[in-house]
Length: 325
Image (cartoon, rainbow, N blue to C red):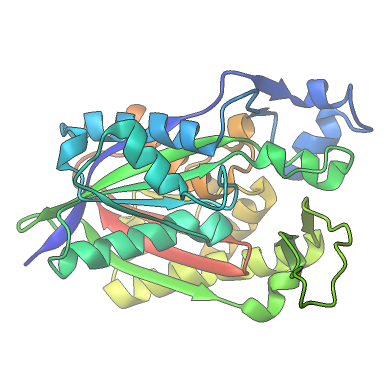
């Protein structure tokens, strides 16, 4: 049976590390206030690198770790809500930078769930025989969309990219189950506006719009604490797996409180969740991929381990994947 396995992972973050103490110099906040509410101590903030630059570096590492070359990749999918520009897509820019001349390329937009959505698409493409080696990247430069005078959001986000190469395999199990879902009626709770409808034929006269991230924190917290538990339970039920069979749950790194709540509801110790939010903050599409790569590099996950990836965020969207490493 034709399955898709994770053949290699990679990640990349900017060198510029911004601590909570650094933020206290530009806004009314402090380390205790941020860390006690979120679990975040540091985040990486780009100085000049844009989303495609981060995506390229992460993708390059993933291809190398998969023991492939760029020409082996036949599809590139990039998940991002902070592209360099509207067109060309980040995926096409990455294709050019990599020299992946045999790859088709497109972007997806599902915010913090985006890496889950992209892996699900890649898995489907491989299973149907359309593609063999798919590079999936989650990449964000959220710092360019953050209102740095709004401490309720500015302290949360960081920049970074993570990547995985999915490869067709007839013997190994790889991805065992995937789910994606959306609750669009709640989309107003987490927004980032773009260009309004303006033309010689419209009624809009070019009024200023807010292009920063805006969030109703209470509503987003309520949503995320519910769906992370529901998604993990569905994955386990659909595959007849026990939570004890799972080596790690690698969640979107949004807020430590969300993970602590989910662990309580799932009746597991919080150590079952792989967390690195302390060092990177919320990197949206990139967060799960960065954490997955870090777990590989630190030998936290090994061949044969079963891991659940779970994401939740803007849209509002969520999803989860069970994969055997």
